[in-house]
Image 1 (cartoon, one colour):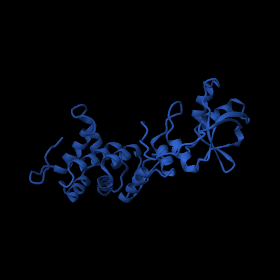
Image 2 (cartoon, helix red, strand yellow):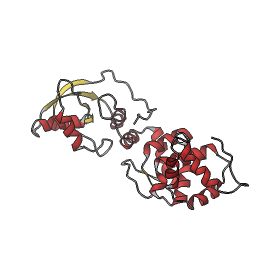
Image 3 (cartoon, rainbow, N blue to C red):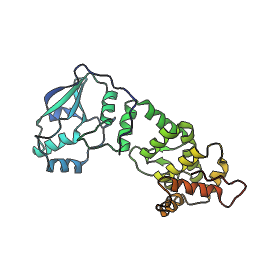
Image 4 (cartoon, rainbow, N blue to C red):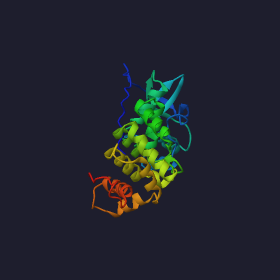
Length: 269
């Protein structure tokens, strides 16, 4: 996943970091706030191919007399694993005078040799870091009536395709985005199949293209008459007949128009 653009500015440091040897049992991972959970399979994978000569130094924030890891928790765990589960000194890049919010924003910007963050992990970290764009996205989603699930688990009213949803929010703005999500929720009563990535993209694109032209009540009523998987299935069945998101938006267009001539919208794409 390509990293989401972060419009927050992290203040510069006169001394960015200091390399220090720190015992592994002193290194803490703030999972209750912005860090992701530890993944045993990732630790095993790193341990199997570990070479200290090319390994990255963990990035650590010294705050309130404690060392908090914001990049490299799995590498630390792999080193401990290779040491028979016993603590050991690890060379770290230690940053000073950072807030926990600044740590979260740096965590969300991980690139290079770090394992790329999932959309949910990145958004969660940016939200904790008080990234205003992400906070507005979360607020708009909740105002529309959906539950933004950072763990990306599907369920009733749960918007799990967080990367797609954030992209559409950024493209459409709050008003159109809330309208599209609201229509999906109202038409299909929060059915998880109505909140698939393809369906969210389709409805957002339709709302954007036909803004102030469609009748909302008609759109909701017509959608209720269809299985929410219709947009995904029939769009996918089109293959290369229509490119990308358009083949899914076309399904919303067809549902809305039906057999009507008087109220039909023109094909504009």
